[in-house]
Length: 349
Ligand code: G3P
Ligand code: CA
Image (cartoon, rainbow, N blue to C red; front, side, top):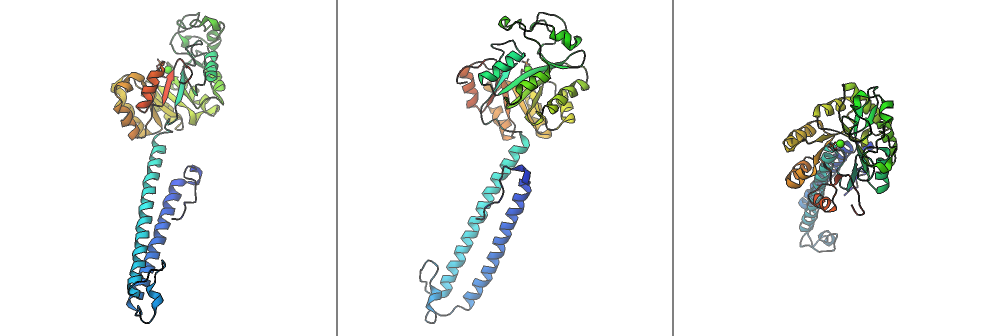
């Protein structure tokens, strides 16, 4: 079997097209050889000398002596035919295998076959959620990706904070979107973890800088915003910092994701499930639009493991939030979930 001369995983050589061309050439070569050989064999059979005249024509390449030269040639022909069948079967298997790989790479930006542990709002179990301290602690603890919620300040700067107001997590009060960046950053964001006194609400750009060189993927979630332009501010920063092919931008509102897709098709869309009834809608949207994953609260999947299989069959991955138990992580792995968000991380998770 000739060897395919390209690396199947090197998309720069136009792998799909080259593979099909190559297969066609291999099949063409085999086909024409076979025809030529068949004509030659038929001719030899017709004019086969008698065994008494030329003995060596009765002996095949393996040294086996046949009753007649015609028998020997027929055996050669059978061998050739079985080689042809073998070759076409092999090619067929390879084509199926390659098609499956192409399908997977098209439908999903990448399956999380290796376990991906995503820090939910940073390492929010130990440091104040969505602060630089929480992001750095997450990286130090071995999380390989970071999730954060993003909102826009009154003066148009994307910042990392979950709630619409600053009340729960800082020493201030009021709506995030009503405050300028400097008002937001004058607050102490260590209210939930006072040990980190002086922690600030970070800008989204600061988050991107911390992630650089340390994260497999980033998972920003669009929370409240005023206009489409606010979403483009987030997208622009993702592009500016080179994250567009390693970014899963999440939202519970699928219209937000449509806006992102129109702004930049390279960014993976993360369809958050508000409840299980949105599963089919999310799946259909990803099947149609591509480059997306589903993000589910983990009990939805633990209680409905067949949904993981349904999504996988379509080449669509599922990540879950928020799991803080090693035992549950093991159960999730068993049903095929390999991307998990956690607030905590212990050795071996
Ligand atoms: O991004 C997954 C999860 O964070 C969604 O819920 O409320 O924690 O943002 P929430
Ligand atoms: Ca979130």
